[in-house]
Length: 165
Picture 1 (cartoon, rainbow, N blue to C red):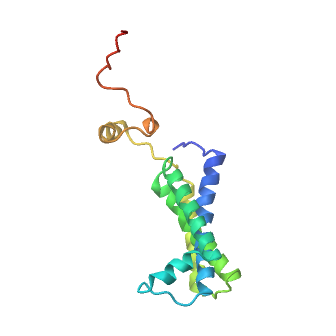
Picture 2: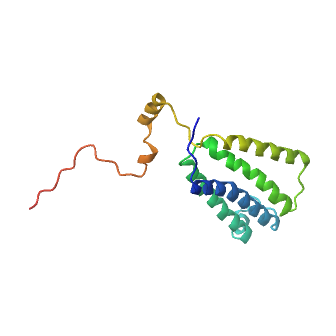
Picture 3: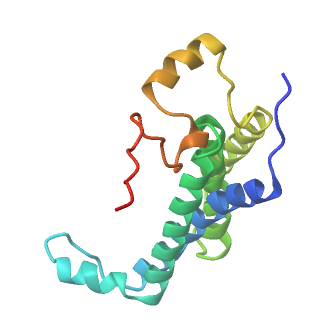
């Protein structure tokens, strides 16, 4: 089955999905290791942690992830976008091992290889599934087309023109 190729900016969005979350999570971990344990029974310590540099940077990266994730979901299927987030597990493992100096077991490395293989299989498929016409007509009654999102709808009844005075 032939499918459309993604535009360069769409690849950039998928790259942001794959990179922002693992970088954000790693920054959160880096910031939390320098703080004492936090408990939900002491919300002031949790709020203070948010304003430390590593944690604030991690939160900013996670906001960037969420924005790029929503953008990708606006033009691609979840089953295409979600593996980009799964690939983040690979990036997290490398960041944890070489930046945070965390030990990683052989079993986890094997899991990372399996995730990478799975992502490569999913990446070969179409980014947006084209539904058959019968199924599409049923869903069109339930939700407007994506192309019409954000456009001003035409009024159902013509608006009367004001008469000059």
